[in-house]
Image (cartoon, rainbow, N blue to C red):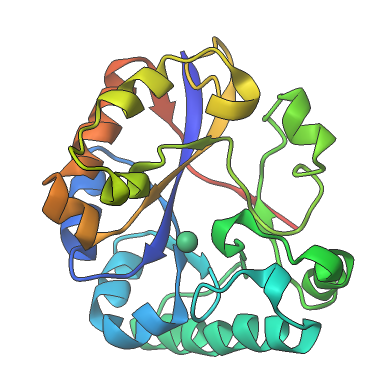
Amino acid sequence: MSKAILRIDDSPSEMTPEFIDYLEKKQITPVIFALGENIEKYFDNAVYALKKGAVIGNHSYSHPNFSELSFEQAVEEIEHCEKLLDKLYAYANVERKYKLFAFPYGDKGGNNKDKLQQYFKANGFARINDSAIDFEWYKERKLNVDMDSYWTFDFGEYMLQSIDDPSLDDIFKKVHSEEQKENGALLQKGSTHVIMIHDHPQTNRLIPDYYKTLIDYVTDNGVKFIKPEFVF
Ligand SMILES: [Zn+2]
C-alpha cells in the first residue's frame, strides 16, 4: 500500500461541482490549485468546492511559463490570483488558513527561482507537508525544501488531447511502473505521494469521467488517499 495526497490543477471549471461530489463520496480531501482567470469565470463552482472542504491554493492568474517572465511579472501573476482567492474565501465565509502556490508546468521561474522562493517566505506562503515523501530524486531537486508545492506522480491525462486515439491504457501502465524518477513508482510499498490530476472539461469530452476512472483505478490498486497537511 502507498499513501497519497490528491492535487487538482487548473480549477475551477464547469465540471468542478461534479468532481467535488465524486471526491466527497470517496472521502478524499483535495488540494486544488486554481487559476485566477478560472476563478473569475466559475466563481460559484470554486465557492462550492471550498464549502465542501477542499483547500484552494494559487496556480497563477493565467498559467504562464514563469521562466519567461520578469520577476515583477511573476509577482503580478501570483498577486492577481491572491486577490481573487482572498475574495473567494471571504465570500464563501471560509477561513483561509494557508496561502499555497504551485507553478504552472512545474516551471519554477528559471533565473528568478531563488528570488521567488524568497518572495514566498517573506509573504507567508505555506506548502503541502511532504516530509513523508522519501524519494531521492525528490530531495535531490530540493522539492522538499522549496516553498511552492510540487508532485511525485502525474497522471499526464492532459496529454490525451494531442493523441489520435485517446485511451487511459498508457496511464494504467504508468501506475504500475516501478521507475521512480520518470513515472513516480506510485505503488511502491510504503511510499507517500502527491498525485496530480487536472480539472479539464476538454479531457472529459474525450474520455467521459476520466477522473473517476483514474482515481478508482489507483485506489483499487492499493493507494490510500490521506488528508493534506501544510507547513510553513
Ligand atoms: Zn496547470
